Image (cartoon, rainbow, N blue to C red; front, side, top):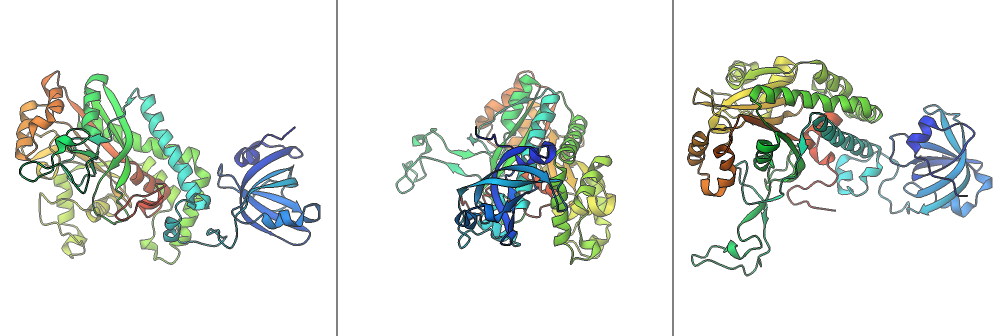
Length: 481
């Protein structure tokens, strides 16, 4: 009878010495001599490799030659106590089958240190490295935690459209969706493209946000959240930008800005606690990796140790202050006075940059910060206008190393105020009529926020580049795999 396969993770935690098992996986390394070989086997279920002990005289020489780094093998054998350090058990091989060979002359991931840049070029294989297997196991855990958090709170998961006829942020920079012949599109009399002939009968784009549709759901179901891909055609090649990224956007009826802040803080802490409770081995590996990488840096230039940083967010209440208070702090700060900031803060109304956000979090308060009451001129049309006529009930949550990780607001529920604001910003009301209906029929206080999933992943894993926390990054001039 064929032995049932056991995952390496389960074998290391529960298998009994003396029992016979079958494991399958990919070879990480093989070392040894004419008498004995040691094969490090990994099947993706854990960062840990299983050591397979091979008694060389008992096996065919041609078979052993095929067991090279990257090859997939199946091993039947007996669990024995480990002689080496690091693991309590290993497996003494009785029978080995090579399921798939990996030519060592051609297989690009040989057992040596590869740069993250090199691995990005091999994104289809990088899951097989310790670093990326750890990152993507954590990514799964974080996605699961998102659903668990909102489900426990009685929110409904809502799928908002990826193809849209509106620009939620008023930001432009959207990807067009069209089936028209690019060489010979139908034209209007004035020479512009006639989108009435297109598939949807109008100009459509990939969405930058599910928020507006999410608001419609919240105004009937009470509390909803979206979690899906969003797209931005911004020609930005930084370590923080992707053209395709995942957003989590809850929208809540009967919530004001304070309820919104409370929920966002609770949510972020829930996800971090979930990572600490469920991904400790992978986090420890990534922490060690980061410390190795930063060995040459001065102490003040090094990041906080990863697990310490995650606990730091859990253990601290987020500081809450207004945009106006933040501007005063920044204007009077040393880096501003000494002209160390790339963007100097002259006065009220300035759009805060990442360097300002990080100063507030890392230098001034040394804990996460929630900024509220931004000038209405630098924020989106749908945000609740405050009584001062100058600011809106917006909130941004700032994290160490990242800057802004969450952006949200109380939404403007007053139809007249919303329509006046749209007029000021040249947003055509007739195209947004469906959205305005929520203010016409049974309007109520409501609020919501957006969390960029990859930014959260950067924070939780300690990785430095957003392209390394999404399986297949989409960036300017790059849509490989």
